[in-house]
Length: 179
Image (tube, rainbow, N blue to C red; front, side, top):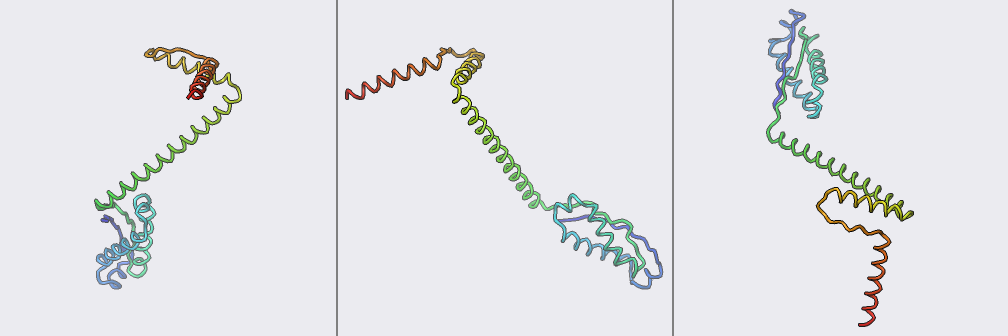
C-alpha cells in the first residue's frame, strides 16, 4: 500500500532545534515516516480509510511527544492525504464485497420464502376449518384468470369436482375388480 501524508511543524525553541539535533528538518521527516509506518501497521485497513482524523491526531501526538521537548520542534498538523491500494488488493476487496452482498441477498430471499410458507400454512389452516373459504378463493381465482381474456373458463364448484372425482374413483375401482 502506498500512503501520502504531510507534516507541518514549527520551531518553538531555536536553541534546542540547532544544538540538540544535527538537522531538525531531516530528523522530523524521518521521525514522521517511521511513526507513520508504525501507526498504519497497527491499524486495520477499514480504520485507515474511514477514520483518518483519529489516525492523524494519533500521529501528531506521537511526533509531538518525540520532538517538542528534546528538539524544540512542534508538529502543528499531520494529515494522511491519500491511500493507494495495489490493484490485487482492490480486486480482492471487490470480490469480498460482492460475496457479502450475495450472502445477504440469499438470507433475505430465504427469510421471504419462510414468511411465505408460514402465511400459506396459516391460510390452509383457515380454509380447512371452513370449506366455504376454499370456494370463495376458487371464485376469486376465476375472476383473476378471466381478466386476462386469453382463456376459456369452465367454472366448476367444489361439490361438482368432488362428485366427479368420486364417480371416477368408483369406475376405476370397478375396472380393477374385473381384471
